[in-house]
Image 1 (cartoon, rainbow, N blue to C red):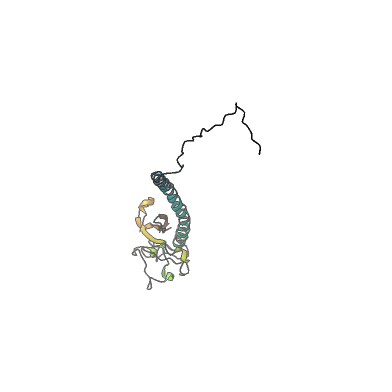
Image 2: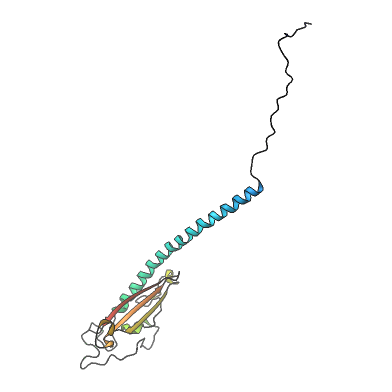
Length: 192
């Protein structure tokens, strides 16, 4: 067995290396709660900015459908005769002319069956009209079920500068979209 001697200059170090004890890194419960609250507030702000934009884009599509519906109905109504006493073919005989009947009918439907579109032969028959039917009297497509229609017809000759107020009628078609946007369409029908 061999014995080894240590050299006198070599020192044996018995020093212990001390390292500071580190805390584990992470978030405390309070920091997590504050983070969740701040995230909730920021998401609420972002969603409040997005929601009206989404509704407006839907309303734009509904307004287009309302415009098509209103313009179609207005064209149909204005293509009718001015009054029952007027020529249905286009003005050869006009009410209030010499030898013709007066234009004194009340505004509103004057047919036997007010539910039949066939009796709507002059513009004032549509006063108070709110049905969603096409020219043939058929129901419109189901996508129009949530739209509302109101037709108003009034004498409006004075609005146009005519001497007799009963020489013109203003036809106003109001279409309300499912989101509550009212769109009005108006035209005049004159007794000329």
